[in-house]
Image 1 (cartoon, helix red, strand yellow):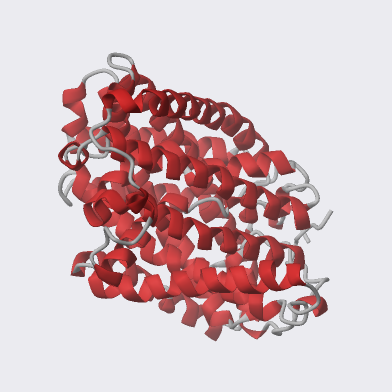
Image 2 (cartoon, rainbow, N blue to C red; image 1 turned 45 degrees about the vertical axis):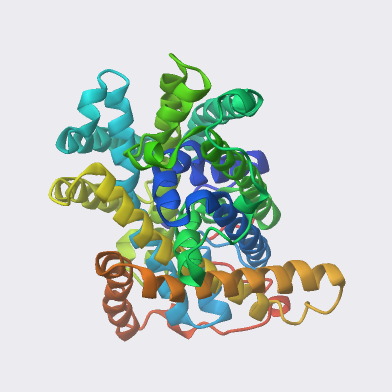
Amino acid sequence: MSEQHTLRANVLGAADTAMMAVAGSAPAYSIGASTAALVAVAGLGSPAALLWCGLPMLGIAWAFSHLGRTEVNAGASYAWVGRALHPVLGYLSGWALIVSATLFMVAGAIPAGSLTLSLFDPGLASNTALVTLVGAVWFAAMALVVYLGAHVTARAQWIMSGIEVAILVVFLVVGLVRAPGIAVEHFDWSWLGFSHFDGMGGFAGAALVAAFYYWGWDVSANLNEETKSARRAAGLGGIVGVVIVFGLFLCFTVLVNLLLSADTIAGSSGNLLDLLGQAIWPGPGGKILSIAVVLSTIATLETTLIQVTRTMFAMGRDGTLPRAFGRTHLRWRTPTLATVVVAVVSVILFVAANFLGSVGEILSAAISAIGLQIAFYYGLAGVAVVVSHRAELFKSVRNFVLIGLWPGLGAAFLLWMFVQAIGSNDAVVNGIGLGLLAVGVVPMVVAWRKGSTYFHRVNAAADTVTAAVPTGGDLR
């Protein structure tokens, strides 16, 4: 097979994939952009939403780890769900990632633009057109870095995400130390329970937003063809990434409850960490945490681009998207057409975002819609590992818990959340989230009718698929 159909192997190590997983979940960005939406539906129960969504998410991370040991494929859930369950479900898993990642280009780049402008003049941050323009510039820069390959992207992530996490840890420690003297609320264990939710529908809506916080750690799985010792390292990186962001999200949300009132949070307009920084360290605190959010947003734009381009590459290689998507640059070995198409579509969405309303409205609708798509493909991956590894489940207690029970419960939770949230979401959110999923049926039918071999892959248990290698793949 020509070099034009392969990614560059062995350029990332286990530590690189863990850092990429942390960057993919974007702790500073997620806290800054999503907490207002989470508090709107959960109130003081926001930490509970992150806790009870984070535990199932760890189960899904275990699922990705075990699925990756069976088959090394840049398409990750697209390939694994298709083999274990059904090609239609696998295709829709890949499509869900593509549309959620593309939608995120708007939800992610807008805070990058807003916070960049606010560092110079806070008044400019409310100018939607200017915010979108600056966000587009950041996006274009990250698209170029991603195009230069996984090695360059990983080096950039160590710098950006390393600084981001260091800033967050320092502010978390200082904030918790100072909290008794400046708190607007006293800590209550009910914040980790279910009493603050408006019934099961309210909990499902809160969990949907919480799922958006965690989303992105699975970029390590999409990088498996470019990772050393891919069968183990890529999955381990995802698990480590989820554990790190789980701790950061839970602790920071408790800190937000302690230091900021509900009215302050509601009026934050996607810039909540600026307000939190001011509360912790009056004066420079807000600016420093805003810098962390800018770095976080830029970093997660990179990882999201990697996820969507690697998924499109795998689908193009299989012929489930036009085969041109399965070609790579001769020198950089990155998916050329996928990167260009995502960049162009994202720019168009930036322009369209000007007509959707304020920055806060755009973020709120996008976050909830993406949450539906995340719950869909993560849930299917959890089911896939139980089905594909069914012959191993009862060989040991460890297998039963880590391959069967935990991923299975995680999948059940996410799919339940998906169904419940549909009933509680407004028509706009459901229209965006479900409508974009439904659009994927059209290219799927076209690819099926053209005879893509992906739709004729044999379903098998994990112990009979150890040699599954994607066309042009590399298992070194």
